[in-house]
Each structure stands twice: as C-alpha cells, then as structure tokens.
Length: 451
Image (cartoon, rainbow, N blue to C red; front, side):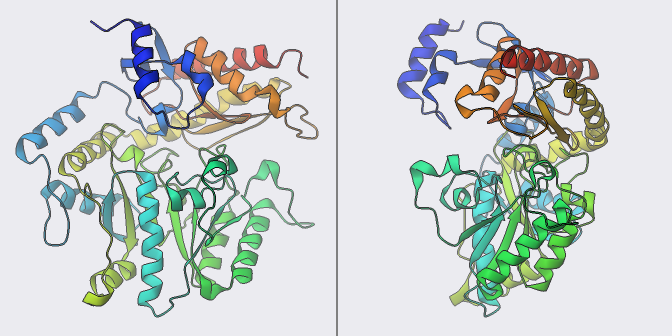
C-alpha cells in the first residue's frame, strides 16, 4: 500500500531535486505509479492520457512486458560489462550492427552513451577530433539553430538555442554560435522573393563565412525542432544545408534524439528530404525509455580517423555505461517490436490523422499555427492572428493551458505559448480525438476574455 499522497509530497519536497525546477509546481506534484499503453495512472488512481510520450520517449507506451523480460534475461546472463578498448559484449555488438541496417546508409559505427545530451557532447568532441586528425586544428566551432534543443550539460547547453536554459549558468562555451531557425511561421529575415528555407540556409552560409570555414567544425540541428516548438523545416532547407556543409568542409550532425526511431513516420527524419548526416545522435525511442540509452553514429571516414589514430592522438573519449548490455538488449527487443508491429508506418498514418484533427483548432481565434510531422505536432497560440503578435508573457497562456489540460486528464508540454504534442505510437484514433477535445476546451477556457 502506498503512503498517503501528502506524505509522499513532503518526502519529495525534502529530498528530490527536480529537473527544470519551478517552485510553483510543488503543490501540483503528480506521482505516477503505472499505466498501460498511452494511459498513465497516479498514486491516487487517477488516469491521464499521455500526450507527450512522457518526455518524447515512451514510444511503445507502458505495459510492454516483452521489454521487461528482455532486461531480466540479460541481467541473468551478464548484468554489466564495459566497452572500453579491449572489451565488448554481445548485445552491444548486435545492436550496433542492427542500427547500421536501419539508419542512414553512410553511418557505419556507433558509440553508445547514457543519454541524448551525452551523445551530443560526444559528437562535438568527435567533430573536433576528426578535424585535428586531418591537420585542421582550428576547426573547433559548432553552429546550431536558434530554438534548437540539444541538452543541458555545459557544451550541449551552449549549443541549445533557447536562452532560458542559459541564464543562471553563464558564461556559455564561446565556440558555439547560433543561426536563425527555418521556421516558416515566423521567418522575418527572408529577402524579396526568397522562401524561408533558402533564407535560413543563406544565413547559415553567412555565419560559416563570418566565422571562417577553417574555424567551423560542425553544424548540429534537429531535423524537426522538438522542445523549441515543433518547427518543421521547409522541404528545401536540409538539402541546401547539406550542400553548404559540403562546400565549406563542415560536418553535419543530425540530432535525432527526439525524431529518431519512427517519431516522424520514418526511421530517421532527415530521410524525408533525402539527406544524410556525417554524425547522428540518438536516444529516447531506441529503448522506448524503458532503460537509459543514447548514442552517436558516424560515417566510415570518421570511424577510420578514430581507429587509425596513432597512440599519441587517440580518441580519448569514454563512458562507464557505454554499451551497457542490459540497455542494449532492451533496445534490440524494442526494434523487434517496432518492426513486427510496423510502428514506423503507424506513426506516419496516425500522424496524418492527428494533424487533421488538430487543424480543427484553427477555428479558435487564439490558434495561430498548427504544424507537425508524424506523431509530433505544435499548436502555437497568438493574441492576434493577423499580425502573429504573441500574448503578453506575464499572462502565461501556454502554462495555463497545460495546467487546465492536466486537470482534465491530459499530459502535454509547452514552450511558452506553443503546445507540444507527441503521443506514444500505440495511441488510438479515439484517444487522439479525446486529446484534441481536451486541448480545445483548455485553450477556449484559458483565452476567454483575452482577445
């Protein structure tokens, strides 16, 4: 029997440091204990529809005993081994080979990490390492997008283009530079006759030239910006980016921590535009969040630079839990389930249904934009649809909508006045209808009298 909810809240307040801590959340603590599929349940027995896959990662939903069994079976065989040079384990080896069969054709080798931020830190170091091995020791700068999210460790935070994550941890690492996002809804930098994708690509090229191509190691971007507001790029953006990176010898890093493993209706999202990266980072959906696992995949030329380095120039990067056999075993079983149940195709089909249903919210005067790809979508609220003027920040419209939805049994996330939605792949159409209905009521109730 669980302790009284108030006792648990007191213990939490005394002993837990919450990520992205907001003191206003203390009296609204939801303590989850279980669930099934796209539904989660709290300690008081109340059920919620999970509209954000917990943190964009619980793709297969709760109650997948097959993943629990995979972990238990591997623990009985080999609970842990490191993968430092000279050591390996079967699940890690098999998973790395499996990933090469489902990821971009050019990516051949994997280094496993414990999280997405960890993977991005690894990618930044590897980009620098690669260029030093090529004799270009000054190529150290990393370019990234405004509103992009790459984690909150020091280098990942410096790449993250959302200022709220920086303010209390400055100074950031100086070799990280942000360029405008290819956000079609709020592009205010296009020249006459220039579309948003071409405009954003032009500014990327301008930044590379300004910093000096001999100083820029890599450009990192999410194929679809997630935490920053689900910004789907124009179709021409990433093909242009790939050309620019090739032209100036800049590595392209695809941060597929959210978009990887089917979230956008493809195994990996850059394939929507026929583009391949030099480095890809992943996490979240690789185990459907049942255990922590992330990683970095690289092309053969980068892998060869690592394996061919002399002792004095070794790739001195490591992680205690890299290639953890239990995590890798769960990832292998996750991929089995995804393939067997055709969940990538399901995410594509359900994503189109979800977007159609969300577009009915454009009937509401406060809804300025609906956008999405696969099972991830953003609903942007505005005070004036004609001018796209946002609400006064002091009104905290997005926060209030999230809270009202929560009270009605729906868990979502928001960045300011953009509502982020990314339900598990196993959600039903009826549940998507309920999601949209709850969200509609929350928007209507919150914005009544504000327009």
